Image (tube, rainbow, N blue to C red; front, top):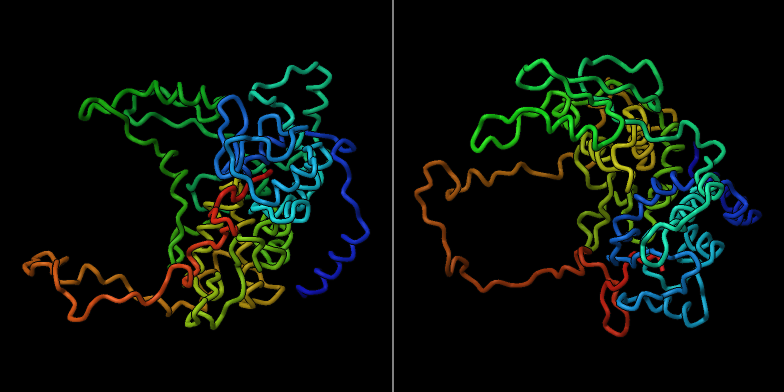
Length: 419
């Protein structure tokens, strides 16, 4: 499985394929609301929407570019506004597919949505909200059309995470969602909390009905076993906590292309200001080291735990165990640590040693004199160093300060903005 022929094929296909206007696609506004979670870190929409890193998106459809008075837009967006850009559905579709191609100089950090159906869905969702944040009054026919599922979307809802319990392998696909069980209240009163209640409000009411703990001020209650298990998903370097499962490099490639490449690049090279996942080996002693999973991370368990817990961005914990194994296998492949026919599983997981496994040292601060149990030594507070303190490195050189300042001195203004 070569990484390079695929890129050539992708380029040739892109050259002969235009973007279909969203109006030509079936639109699923409900799915658009789910997709919008990827944007919610920078943008808000609805009655109480406020501008954040990016401007609020109330009334964005047919809104002139750079129209929010109290938001500081990039120069590129201001120029587009001066040129008369209005965010029609077609213009939004082009921008959401390739922000920096549509608007030169935009600070939008998101690399773009890869699927035309997702673009159509998110525009349909945003079009529900008027300039004041109130949902538009639609006819029954319009509501039905806006919520008509896109072809092929059936069965694509993120799978709920399985709760750790018996270490038995799943017998169905990771997309299947098992019904949530009823769990007993911690005081053994005999009543139960229905974890499969139809709405979040129902579940909250059911949990609130549990009796108080009897502790100080009768605040809170003991956590239910199922609640504890739902959060008990950490994985340790020795393999403790790994769920039973497996995934191949080929399976991981398909998942990565769909859910990860828009931010991390097709081959882990990073897109825009999103982090690189591959490469950088041998650069840690350079003035500007390239810290990737292959060059810097010491434990594979950290990769699995982070991907399973926090990714994809905006849809964290939507991946099943097998999907996570497959993604981690593909990331290993991108870093030339495994072959293209490799399959990662809980059985061979601990046999993978990361290149920088010996690059860290244990935290020994507890052994320092001031931190020992019989700390008698007084901590030095003045004149502790024989020579004056010196600045040896600047944060900008260490690559921890993004260089996004414009010539006019504005720093980090409008970073990540959609318009």
